Structures are given as C-alpha cells and as structure tokens.
Image (cartoon, rainbow, N blue to C red; front, side, top):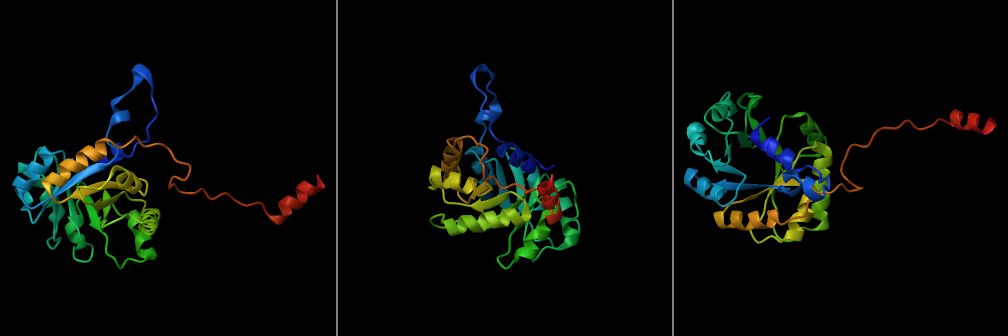
Length: 239
C-alpha cells in the first residue's frame, strides 16, 4: 500500500464517538487529505511546510522525489516509457498521477507504486465500472469551480458508485467549511490547491471540520437478497 493510500484510509475512518479519558488521536485526526500541486521541489517544500499532506510535482525528474522528504511525494508523469512508474518510485516518489488517454499500460506495471487517475470527461458508465478493478489510490475528477451544486454532487456520487474509488479534486483556498464538508459527503477525500497560501488556508478549514459519522444513506454496496417466489407465498397462506 502506498503512503497516499494509507493516508486516505485513515482520513475516511468513521468516528467512534469515544468519550472521556479514552479519547484517541483518531477521533481528532483530519478527515480529508490535503495535496499541493507544485511546479518544482522548492514549491513542494513550501507547501509541505504550510500543511500539505501530499505534494504533486509536475514535470519532475524520476529521481527528484528523494528531495521531498517532508511530505508524501507524487509526480505527474507522461507514461510513455516502460516501467516509468517504477522509475519514479525508486526515485523517491510514493505515487504518480497519469492521464489514461496518454499513458502506456507498460509504464504503469509497478504494483508497489500508488496511482491517481485523471478522469477523462468522455468516460461513460461502462468505462467507469471497469475502473473498480484497477489499482488506484484515487480518481482526480478535476476542479470544482464556483458553487458546489446539487447536480455536481449527483455526478460525484455517480462516479464513486461506479468506481468505488476515493475522489480527488482541486478547490480554491477560500472554500468554506460547509462547502468542504459537502464535498466530503460526496466521497471526495483529497482536495488539492495550486498555491502555497491556499494550502495554508485549506489546512485550517480541513482541521476545523467535524468528525465523520456513519450516515444512513452511506454509499455502500447493496446486498442482493433473493426475493420470495410466488410459490413461497402460497405455501405460507396454506399453513
């Protein structure tokens, strides 16, 4: 499991509501993962300093991850060379971000690396369902621009229902706590920012969010329960 996947797993734990002296650190842990989108190692280090849990460096060399020890490091890759993900992992990166329309399958064969897929806009329902079988830490659904509408919430829930993968999105630094919580309720676990000052603002907003609680309408697979046949009902009437 990549460090990013482990971080996501911890962030999605449901609060047990422990009271008194038995309260644990898990009860107060951040319920979303904060990522910074950096241009270079210097930018990434500044984002980590301001509270980013993970940093993604665009256009980084495979060995540049060794200079990013202060946060979980990821890189956006082209995916053109064989074993490209492996080269980045061996170079110190925990995960890679890729475009499935451009990346070669042979570039993403390393089972030890973490993967974040940038979701194409033209994926239909059948394509989305196939993603459940892929080894993905998260799915990048793009940026949330403006108000989070109910329509957008429906779309995010649909993507999660089809893929069963944590969602990742880019947001503005001034997004409010209620808006961020609404995103969290639609299975968005990772929020990303492109500026260090936005990372700092988001860190405070995320840390102030209430703990996750179990909801009656949680998105979980519905068990297939056999329905009684007409014959079963007739037997009960006769008895």
